Image (cartoon, rainbow, N blue to C red; front, side):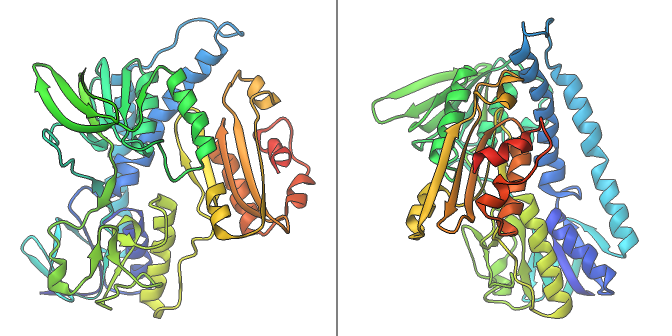
Length: 447
């Protein structure tokens, strides 16, 4: 049996942060992953996706300016784009391994399962740890319907060698909406089935309405309140059987993508052998991200049932907190007060803080400033028809929440997050002198 001060299960951004920080503080540290090192974001999520989004942005920009000074056709060569994306992604595991080697982290490759409260098995190796961290991330939810094994998942989509003529997405979250916008601009006909009344249900309803309109304007066939109840193979196609309040329909498509959500990846870890309590949201942890039932275990990122959003920056922040608590004892609580998030559709949707509905439910006295900004200069100069905002502030003028859809919303939302953290008031933001013309210069007019 090999003994370590710290064993980290999972080499995504949370696990990577914890392993490197602990090793650099002199703790004997080991890490393992059942997949190549790097995690979901770097290898099969945010980073490769944003490369595809970058190509879609060029198409969108060219189409919007066609006849307004831009002429000539432009299109996505999917095979070349995949080659470019794969070249970027393929370098990550070796780079991560070099970092571990430099930090003195012992590396294992394989799935880990618990043998006792402080031991895990990785293949033929049995490891004992003073502290064990679960940072395994999340996996696509399994579709419990006839033919539920037939769709591909988000990882498969990011590795498609060819883009089919027609793609159907099941779900109405980040993955379905973002990938649908990419595929549509790459030349595929796209259909989305979502069983809820609106997609992106955790975002502000009014801002999402703008995205729904923009999605349908792109000729994406978006079906809401429609549940997929079965999938069948039909020669080189698939039949997707759906149920809505008024009817049951069957649709044909070339490819089905399961984008119905993700769940913590805790399968086959034998958590019960280690007295580790969990639920559908992940490992049950206390305010220090320590297991409620086994003090030798911590969890971070998508594998933890914490108060954080399932976002890469939040996983990194939780990783720093866990590392600090292992090194110095429980003293650092993760700070979830400002968690900006973005949906990389085109237009981009971004948010930080409370929605209007949450503000009403909080009982706080508040005011809302909301409008379309499609007639503002920054929309007109690039011929963007979708640009809107909603800013919620309290009676003292502090920002409670901001919601934006439009060009560079993902950058603008960071400025609002900083304003919330710095406790700037509406008057402070309004009276700032901004560089102009810039997207940031619109912020003063939004508050």
